[in-house]
Image (cartoon, rainbow, N blue to C red):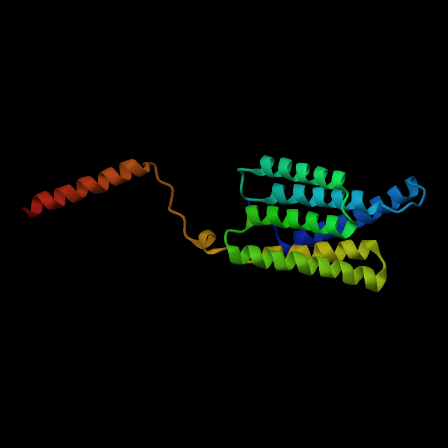
Length: 188
């Protein structure tokens, strides 16, 4: 599976902003215009983005475990009910951790991704202050998040992989050792 692309991230940003603002409007109307409907929208958007990340990761091992761990952490946050700003920050941190575990292989790329996540939070704040539009706030957040695909892989990901062969490592080492013994015996 190939890595996600920026264009794909723009599509995710569009879908998230439309669905998030629609969900907020519907939940607010159902609650009689009462506030406090941002928390379920944050959780829903984070869950949707998590599913997207886990579906697009080239890594197969650990996806179910990561999903369950995220769900448990999100349930703990829901029960603890921290202030909305802290709740948002912790959800972004959990998504950053998932992206770091599944898409990055070095500390430098993980720190670059953390910087990107903090810039995305700054974009949300800027968009909400400038426009007051939740749709534009969500759009800005996920649009900045789409840039994670530009973070270069770490050195471990750039190493060329050994071509697959039909012999296992032991047979390969055994063949090399026999060749070395033949050369040594012929030199005597």
